Length: 336
Image (tube, rainbow, N blue to C red; front, side, top):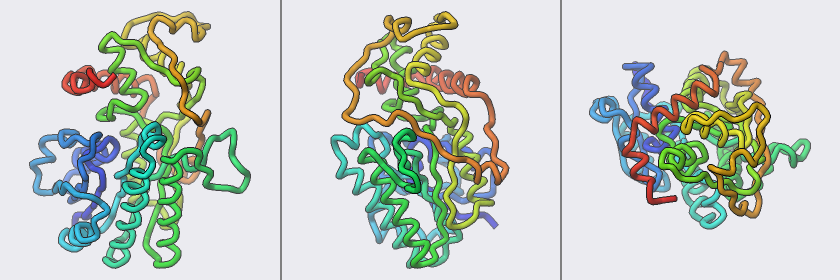
């Protein structure tokens, strides 16, 4: 029998790739209900056309905060597993509109948990969190699992606590998943890699906050999809799994790679910040910007997960996708 999945935020970046992955890699295995409120970063066409017309896929435009809507979806579609990926996720936005993050992240997650508790038939509730809940690696407090340093991360940490409370108090079958920075096709332009690809393709300068020395660990979206599937199939209940790689780069290093790939520039083996001056404008950093995030992937590795390809190969595939979708570049041309 097919597994009935409720995927939230399915027209957004990671969740749309996950839906496409399930249908192409595991045909006839899942029936998927996509609950998405169609916010500014959602795109109905992130879902492949053949999936949109499939009887095994249902798109329901709606808000996770609606108790009646969520309860009806669970009952009508006999949902077995929830993969909760919907969220406000752009850190910069959380500095100016943090209450919206509380509503869309914490309230929505709490409502999904409460409806799931009343439904009582889930086999798994998988919550997609972030490495940022642990805070800046260089500022971690020994023995403290959660140490968020910005409003976005704080809402995600709050969601984790709610998930854990429903697991303990009501035995809701939950799993928490944290991930390093995800990149790949269909990512909204506001995130680092698609924004830089867009600007360079349009012949514009990159804008870098601060000095560009802050580093992030990058995970290709297809690898996140395979990890989520593995966790859904083999993950232990009430665990926290982290998705990460060894691909840690500074913003400056990402800039250099993209300039090299898109503009065909050959940089010297020993290069400096000054070598990028022709293509980069440095702007004021936000009030606080974590310098580094790291996660422990031991539990996920123990399930047998491996990275699919090199960062260089996946970055080239990402560039190719955006350059082969000029409509996406056109949509973002006036936003810089």
